[in-house]
Amino acid sequence: MWASQTGEETEAVTLDFLYVNANAGEAAGGHTALRLGESIFHYQFFPDSTFLFVREPWADFRFLYNDLHNRTISLASLPLDPSVYAGIRNHFTELLITQQQFFDAYEDVQEEDKLVREMLNGRCEISVPGLGFFTKQEFPTLSPVTLKARIETELGRDFLQQTVAQADENLKRAFLAVSGGERPGRKLREQIVWREALRVLAEEWDLDETSLIAPMAGEGGLSSSGAESLLRFGEELACSIVELLRSTRPDKGEPLLLQTARYLVVQRSLAAGQLYTLDPFPDDVRKVWLTEAELGEERLLILQEAFLRQAVTRSSLFFQEELHPEIAYSFLEASRARAWELLQAGNGKQEVRILSKVTLPSRRRTVSLGKLQIEKENLQVTSRAMAEELKVLQEKSEEHYGYNLFLRNCATELIRSLNSTFADAKSGEAALGGWLEPDNGLVFIPFLFYEQSCTAFPLQDEQILTARRLRNLEKLYSQESDLLVWLRESNTLTATLYERRSKDTPFLFFTDDSLLLRPIQGILNLGYAALHGAAGLVTLPFDGGDRLHQAARGIFYSLPELAFGNIRKGSYSTAESEAVSPLGGKTLVE
Image 1 (cartoon, rainbow, N blue to C red):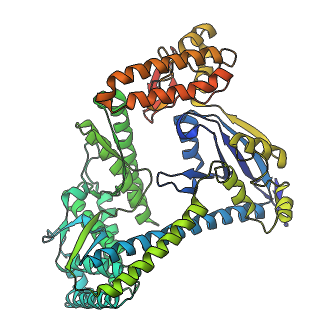
Image 2: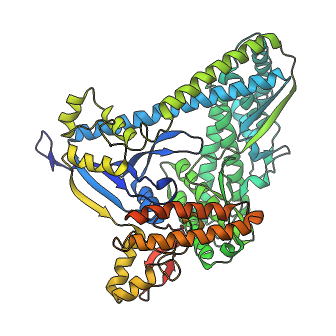
Image 3: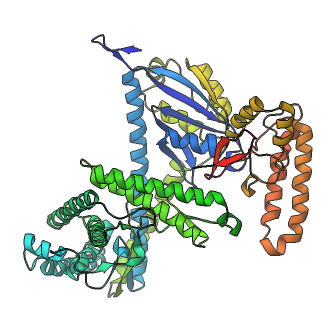
């Protein structure tokens, strides 16, 4: 234990080095991460070709990599002085903030460039976050005092009318400034969003029914205490709306739309005696398609029940929350949306939206400002300047946030991020008890990064978190005959611990737990994948070459097995529990 100057004992703190072994897909080279407390810091490659620093909870990281991706995690700890620990954690947070600020600024310039190009074509269309929750018709009178009446009481009868007129006037001046050669920046967009938010209030728009998560069977009605909690939350929202209308902050339009939508949906819930919430799925949400077979499986029903229970739990937590109800309400929105979306799959809908994290609802709607009379010569100068700035930002993005297999990967950037905490190598070595450079030999290879870290730093308490299948295999070996278990579980045809998935590529034998037989099994896996390739030639006109592509991947991942190597291990879906019955059968999440 580390002792403070007062002699009191403080809890030991460590920096943990992690290595996650390989599997099929993007995981073929293994992965590295650092853990501080219950937070994992690592680098990930994203579909837009950016390579970014990421922080996520340890429980989520382990579930994804150790359970779903079926990969073994090696972990060793470096004891730290609490001040060093805090310094590293603060520095990592600064890196995340700097990264986010860069991409926020980049996105702003992209939006600005798009706006300028549209104006050159004589029109202007703006996507307004939050406006998609409303439809232009009068509010139903759900409470004795309508929202508009509340605003007029507190801010004056003509406040909304005058503020809308002022917003229109400010917008005209902003367009004239842009026409005169001034860059639109965020100001023009913010003024448009603000004007639209005011129109929603002044014209008493109603909620769009398609933007709501309706009550679900199994939730039950609102209790008297639940209704009281919602009533208090609605009052807080109304106060927030009035304060935003008084505010001078330039970006108040978007939160005003959100708070208004939430206020109205709370009133809808109180009137109906059942919970309604906003749909928080973003416009660019990731979607998965379920097959007819998957829609008919029992595990879908089990997942639906589990998600619904989570939503009911979140409702209870929100009703009990007194200090931070808005945060609790955000979690409630996300939980109800996940449950509702999965229940739609049970009604025959094959497309399922995936909400990976809690986000503020922001359903967008495009606003067209019609034909514009713009001085194009000045605007063309602005457009050329924007194009040059975008080019510079793109180059900077590639330089600082691009991926390179040898120079910028999950191992090199992790050690570079750690090193940048310290002023120089000498002070870093004194604080960490060792030092490692990102260009030190073969440190760019993830498992060698871990090995060299174990040598360079005084790491201790190494743990091996065995992959999910191997964990459950050990349980079966303790319950049944070793030979029977091996014969049944060593192949994908009779295994009870694994269900074949197309993303794992076609293969016959697991080779991660059989070193001596691995080349023989690799040959059989190679042949099995080749047979799938032959079948893929037949199905090519019908599946667009998908089966042929999977067969080629299967052949690729079989090749290392011929030389006693192993990459592919199989993976699992979220619906498959790792619990094992006494007979070796697979059970599902409850």
